Image (cartoon, rainbow, N blue to C red; front, side, top):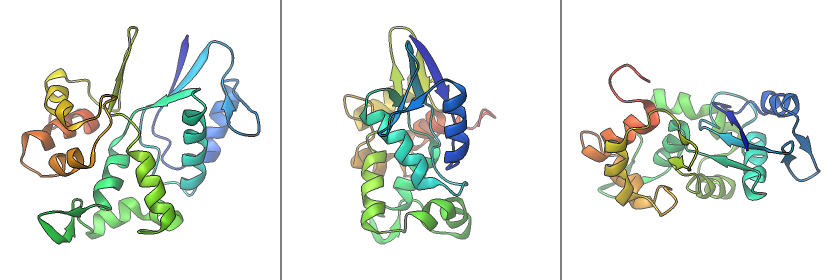
Length: 195
C-alpha cells in the first residue's frame, strides 16, 4: 500500500483537487478514488487561510467516509474546536479567546461557515472524528511531533481511536498544565523550535 501524505491544505480546495488529479485520483461523482494500491492520508491543517474552506472539508470527509483516506488532526482543527467551546469555569469566555489575533486566524473558516450556525456545529462535530495520531504496523502519523511521553499524557483524554473528547478538549486548553504542554508538543512541535 502506498500512502499519499497530504499536509496543510488550509482551505485551498482547488490546489487539493489539482494535487489529487496529479497523483492519479479520479472523482466518481461522490468522492475522489485513489489509484490501485494507494490511500490518502491528510496530515492536518485542513482549514483556515484559503477561500475554499467548505469545499476542502467536503472533499476530505467524502474520502474519509468512503474509507479511501485517513486523517490526523492539525493545530488549526484543534483551535477551531477550542474557539467554539465555552470555558466551563467561566461561561463568558471560550477555551480559545476571541482576541484580534485568533479572530484573524479563523477569519476565512468563519467567513464560509458562520460561527454558531447549524453548519458550524456540524463541521465541529466532524472535526472531533479526526484522531490526533495514527499508528499502524508500518508507520506512525501525527501533525507535528511523535512524542510518546506526550501521547501517554493525552491517551486518557482520547477515545480508543485517539480522537479528542470534549473533556479532553477542555483539559488540553488550560495553559500551564501537563495536558496543554503535551497537546502543544504533538500538534505544534512544542517549545524547542520544532513548530
